Image 1 (cartoon, helix red, strand yellow):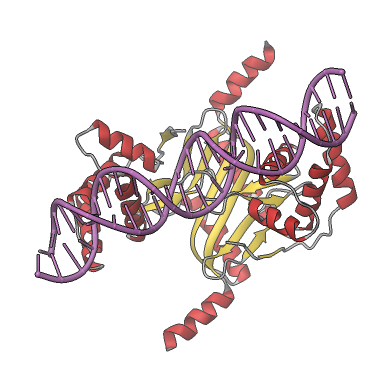
Image 2 (cartoon, rainbow over the protein chains, first blue to last red):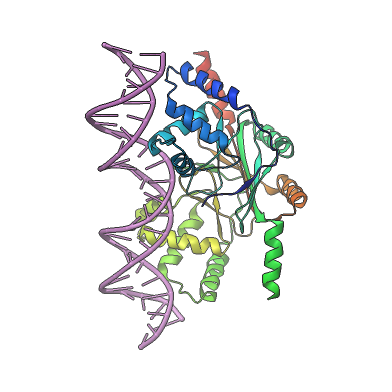
Length: 164
Length: 164
DNA sequence: CTTGCTGCAAAAGTTTTGCACACGT
DNA sequence: ACGTGTGCAAAACTTTTGCAGCAAG
């Protein structure tokens, strides 16, 4: 299921720098910066919020950027290692990714009715996370926080339904 | 990968009641309480923390309780609908479940090195969750909170490694 | 009896992999 | 030139489904 996302911080990001970051990372690893990798990064940058592998494939096919499914998956791994995207756990059947370069880890508010996803900024979450980790002697690396619930819209329409 | 779990609250649960709860739920739905369903519930109750479908299958095969994979998956769904178990999102490739009947929703602290999982009790999380929801007009139904990091043990052994 | 349940095997869906060829460096 | 990368198709894996026979109510 494609997920519609309302990004909370409409920060038009540093597209040019990110491309450079990725190229640097790839070369550092002794790998090659190919046109496919550039195209995939581009497609990722065009996504506003959470996305799936299949979605990238589909959208790239619309344009003139044809890459194979295999290459997409392989590149997504590199983008994760480079710290440019992060895997978001929304359901356990399919991977969801998100552009997170330079962002603090956030959480997500998911409407179970409409599928809408809202980002939760990190100031709410980090203090809690760090306190919990300290208590258990853990060193936090990252986190996933998802709240499932009913969005205002869904609550309204379920009110309507229950009045019928 | 099988996940080792250290449950924080070692509450020996109400095994007898839970079986009754499940039977009641199944019958309420006009379904049948079969021996397979009872056996699967039993296997679930024997698990201390997070578990996977394949794990149940394997462990039941060790005993004399042979059920098909298909029946396990079908029963896990009913157990979720009955509110007895909950799906825990630890990775996006495989479903993980946890016995949650009568428990408040918790979070999990996952060690990326050892795979150890520690439960985070809900008092830490609920106030934060509710405040976030109120702010967005959401009605919370459930949540998933997972922190990935290094457990004290893993930190110690990575210290050792880096000294080598 | 009637209706739902099980097991099997096949199907479905996502992600990975093997291989021959193509392309950066 | 060398060593990686790519595309394709097949493989791997988890989860779902169709169906014929079985069992609970």
